[in-house]
Length: 223
Image 1: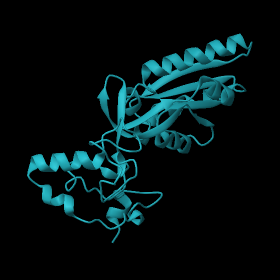
Image 2: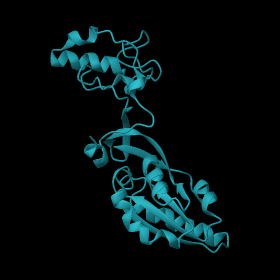
Image 3: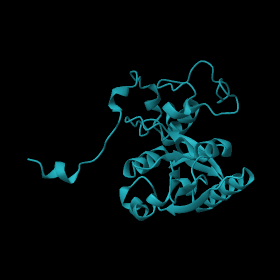
Image 4: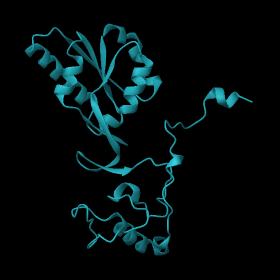
């Protein structure tokens, strides 16, 4: 899932302080799960903005709504009847959601309330760890389900490096060496011969920017 964290309140306040009517828009999927932009977080931010406005003697209305998600136009439709009431929208979605919201309602400013961090997994209550770079060349079937591009501090495809010690990383001794972990798991799986494979440099050309995946109905019907 996508993991993000909220921007400092002062930063968010600064971009909306001249707006008299603001709508805070939350995301009920990834951002709710990582506790960055779900219904609860939207309520907190809206309350904080209202309080800061009162303390600064500003006349500012701050309303709130949480959508199932913001990365799909279908779920933005309920906003169509609302956006014209506001001078600005504050999105508590990932960067993709912010951009789609701004695209769908281009006549209104859309400001991000979050900083998007990474694709990750839940490692414990309120703790998220990065697991994927979305590199477009997945090799997890050969590295025992452990991504060296992401989990190796140096991003080595052929490891471990000479600095690993007792299974720990020389960059950060508190972190497990990704390649030591790969070795140990491949050994358990009886597939240790894979550790000797030599990988060429990563082909980053496969990651097209801006990327696009899937076929539209128009393209499907084209001859």
